[in-house]
Length: 342
Image (cartoon, rainbow, N blue to C red; front, top):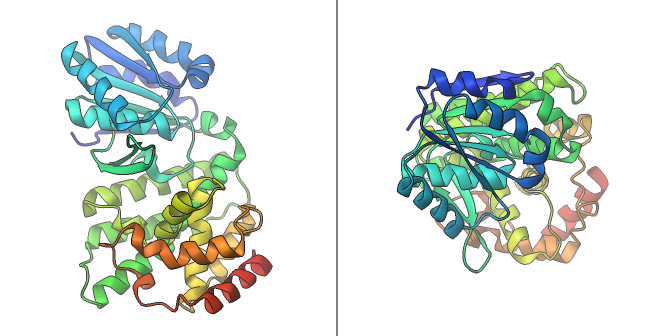
């Protein structure tokens, strides 16, 4: 079930009816949303669905694997012909996985751009022990991204999206390193798309978050998702910086947005391997994406421990972490540099 319809722009939330008709959707349509998002935009979407087929509703309050599976079972058992999911990462991942399991078309309407999950072929859902697990699936077959809705979301979520995409910079360096070390092979198409997504951001003409920049950011995030689809894994957008973020999720008591953590991980890794990080730091500062470890309430001890244990988060992914100097003395020095730099 490949993506075949994508619209990005102002008021695209009003194109639900048109999108469903163009994709020959009819019959029972399951509308899935977060309660808060439904309260704000739900009436607009529900009204359009009812012009196309029979509206069924599911309001999401959690994002577990078992819950996504139950929705898939409901879809199969009641002959639902399409899912329309609207919300943030929680809803989109639940819908993405339910669509994959049930082999049902899925129209995604993201309301935030906090990470590249809006278009990735990966769903991050919680296991029974409440720990997140990344599950392979497929991208949404249809997507409507309304820039007005994105701009009205909390600004910190937009900044997290900037941080998530900038992490492609380190991920590609790690991929190159793994290939040179004979530990992996590079998919040229996936590499090019990931590189294009990061170049679009670093070379953008915009100096602040505005409607036109939001379009650039969305395009970049979607390109990252397509890169993963081509590679058949998250390799084009996820390297040592993501492993560091996973370690923070696992070991740190302070929970930060994923996009901010991987941005910090990117700068940290660039400094660790002695690579120039000026372009990345300047870019983050231009859009006021504050990833200073002290701002994120990551103390020196936690930073050092998570860096030293990051590669254990995914032992089959070869990155610079496999060979870098992870001595406590070296990492403490980098932590101090980050506090001063960021």
